[in-house]
Length: 126
View (cartoon, rainbow, N blue to C red):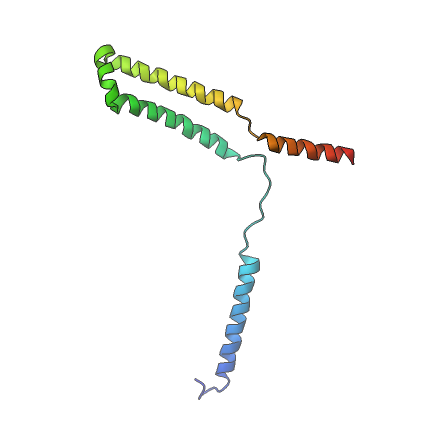
């Protein structure tokens, strides 16, 4: 092309330089990660995790009672209905343990609570 239009290499050079600058602008300004916003917690994921743990307890207790070979001798002693009742009882006990842990474990670590109190105290003093 330089035989037909001798200025072509200069136009191509200008085009590449402009493309490099535009790509740099897009990377630095246009496609930046959005700024993080402070929130009070994990939001809806707290409910999702609660549902997942309840489903996990139900399925694990059911699988344990239905497929474990350790319960075969128990099924001979108390029957299939007794094993089913034992699995339901164990599942309820595990759900009780989960809810007790959920109530006793603090949502915020003690160090974070102390830091919030310290900042609040510092702001009141000013």
